[in-house]
Length: 126
Image (cartoon, rainbow, N blue to C red):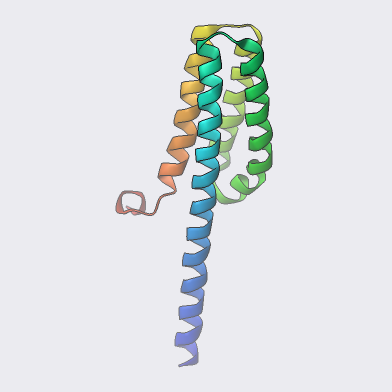
């Protein structure tokens, strides 16, 4: 009976931790996605100062989320996001509309992909 209780407790802790980490990743991914959408809107209208300011806000939010994402996720995915953010920053500084919009779309896709791969479903298990 004691072994069964221990196993049950471990399973509950693992499932609870998994659910909590998924919810954290999902919520931060949504926040980053909405911030990137405002950056994209500023780039589309070529308001570069606003785009830079919104990107800085996104970068600050990412810097706060990054340590937890590093614990929960593969480091290669996090490195891709870091590289993409730096690339986007340089494209905004040079005021390059096509490359900036392309990089924002790629960054949004990276973040969305991470949130999707962490979702508990049969496709991700198998």
